[in-house]
Image (cartoon, rainbow, N blue to C red; front, top):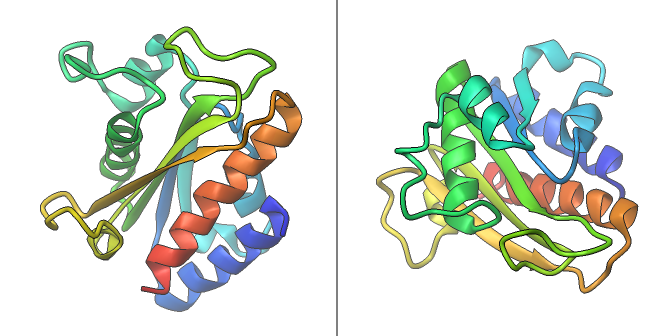
Length: 172
């Protein structure tokens, strides 16, 4: 299933639930937001999104300061949770969705191989997805390793992975 097809399914769920979404993506480069905005009626659920590709963008767009990043590095599940919660909070959405990773053809400066991505969902039902976590933040995260150095294919896989995680949260 493509990211566009999955985005249409997610959009239908959000519209039916009358819930809203904010997105923070990095390595997917806007594919998540693009897929969601391609669905007619997107203004009913899509509050906004940001491609948070640098520390400068992270601070300017989401208000995540270097102090908030203490002890954390990008391309981790913890960082994805911070992005999802940040996007959700900044826009006052019911749900926040985030993606961060290394698309390729080489790995990132943090030591992650190409094809590594982390996704997070922040929302009132997301805690059900986190089997080993309590509900305080209403967040869940997961990691994907594609094993591929194909940048474009990884971007699509990352968008699909993030949207699939949101779909699971919405149907939990």
